[in-house]
Image (cartoon, rainbow, N blue to C red):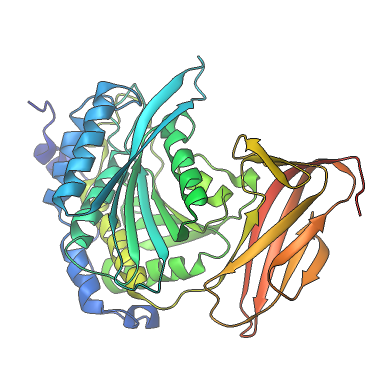
Length: 426
């Protein structure tokens, strides 16, 4: 029997959450898709739905990676994805964690995908959270809140069809160094997945102030503005939060402390969702079911679900430039792949050819500029866009790539590369 009393706990929450705004879609972005569908998706997200998921997850005790509680949580998530008729995929991984005592962890990422209807559009939307938690807690807010949101969005979205593929993903190993998301991102990179946007939810349920219960924060990468626009459009039309955007770039110094990190490092665009109130109960026994403000979590989940539904049908897709070679987390010599190393330590020994590719351009690309440490090194006007890096060096450099098209759009990506070259080759 579950020892928690979620209904009584919800009634005892003293901070009111927002009522959902019922205004229709006002944004051109929302008008490009079906506003009635977005509303219908949002309507599927209920307190009862999220309470059911969160009650089970927190009732398992600790879901620390490798424990039986974590295994039960993974099986539960896979079962719910299956019940929602999603395509379920398990990605098993074994990796060394960054704990005080070196330890190898084995666990699984669980993916439930809803294939898109447009055969000409291979781009993917990802919404993810981590289902593991600290061994000291039941992981109510960190990250039972995000996991419950993923499950609720899976349930709501699975009742509709969309043009673009949506993947709902839960990771293990987050608390040990983003192990699950690192394995998943690496697999997606090798598979050549075209991830249009990754949305991360890590702790979106704690609200104890009147301001916090009406607010949310978004961390947005350089070219994820289209996703932020969708968040704000859905928020204005249906939710009514005060949303704050914080921009960050793809350099490895912005690796971050949550599962968006590996996606950003590998060059994809990301939006990380955060609660506005800090959570002092994180990683403590107090992070149980009662640490979550259910009405607030409901509204945040509605916001994410509506944004996914909007982006899954809209044709408003900006160009995105990515550094495709050398692959992140690899060691190469003279441009030849040698082996995989730490994802944050891409290393090139001797000269290397750096390749960039522009994905889903809306108009012809005019040129691509390659910068090293802020200095322009090459202006390339024809695909494939490539720069031969052959200068002498023995340190880490910041590589920035900016692409331009005929409509005036620009798109950029940044990556740090450890570069060791004492030779000059013509």
